[in-house]
Length: 110
Image 1 (cartoon, rainbow, N blue to C red):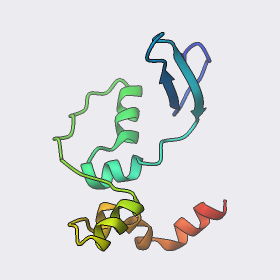
Image 2 (image 1 turned 120 degrees about the vertical axis):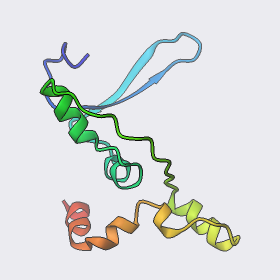
Image 3 (image 1 turned 180 degrees about the horizontal axis):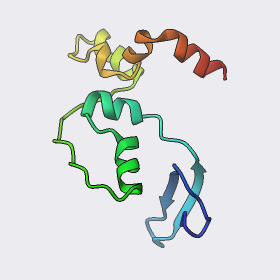
Image 4 (image 1 turned 90 degrees about the vertical axis):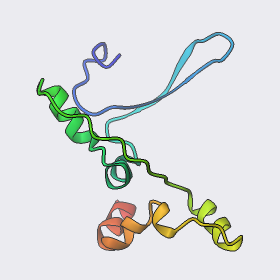
């Protein structure tokens, strides 16, 4: 699809498939990485930008060893706290925001 669009670069394609007809619907195409690309690296150890770069350059690369990880919504985390569950704040994506709040603030206002 991206070749037909003469697209070069990152493309995060949001699509759905109709269960009955099996027809595919493209909802949007974003020329940026998806929001979970940072947690994918931090929590699961998969560096998707590096994978893309290596594939684009035709270089061989080692598939990272599978590392189990979870990421929960803030709502799930709060529910866990209120019900004495076992989720930690680090199980959300927000812990990394505290490491560099200025960068997050600039991202939000941009």
